[in-house]
Image 1 (spheres, rainbow, N blue to C red):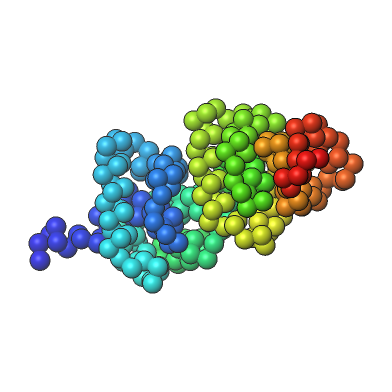
Image 2: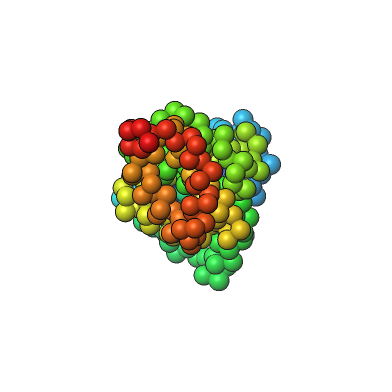
Length: 291
C-alpha cells in the first residue's frame, strides 16, 4: 500500500481533522446542506489554525474532510471515528479544546443539541482528554459570542412558525417574515447578507424540527422565550401578528399559534389585544370567510 493509499479515509492535519468534526456534527442526521457549508466557513475562527488559511486551501481541505467523513460510517461508531481520525491529528491541548469549541458552536447553530451532536461532543471530551471545567468555560464563551446570532435565529424561526401554522405557506407571508423584521430588534439590526444567512438557517431549523406541533410548542417554550429578552417580547408578538395577517386572512390555527406565542412570551391578553388591533384593518377574511 502506498503512502497516499494509506491516507484514504484518514485525516492528515489538525485543520482537516477539525473540519471533519465540523462536517460530522452537521451530517449525523443527513447530507451537508449549502447553508451548513457556509457556517463551517464562517465559524472557522473558533479553531485558530484555520483562521489564516487561504480561501482556496480552506475549500480543498473542507472537501477532503467531507470525503473522509463519507468514507467512514461515523454514525455507527462516533467515538471510534474520533479515536482513529481526530485524536492522532490534533495533539496540542489548546488545539483540542479549540476543536471542541468549534464543534460546539456549530452544533448550537440550530439552537439545541440533539442526540447525535451530544454523542460527538462526548466522544471528543473522552478521546481528546478534555477537562470538564475547560469544556464548560468554552461552552459559555461560545454562547456569549453567538448570543446575537442565536437571538436572531429565534426571532426568524418565530416568524416561520406563524407562517406554517395553517399548513399553507403563502409567498406574501414569507415575504413579510423578511419585510416586517424591522419590528423585532434582534433581526432589525441585520443587513441583507446577514439576514439571508439567518433566514436560511431558520428554514433548516424549522423544516428539521418544527413540523410537529409538540416540537413547535417545546421550541417556543425552551428556546424562543429564553432567547428573547423581556424588552423585546412585545416586539416579538407584534412581529408574529404582522406575519399572520400579511395575506389578509387569519385562520383559526394561526390565531391559536398567536395565543400560544402570547402565553409563552409571558404577555397578557390586554397586551396581545392592543398589539393585534394594529393589524386588524388588514384582515379581510377569517378562515377564508368574509369578516
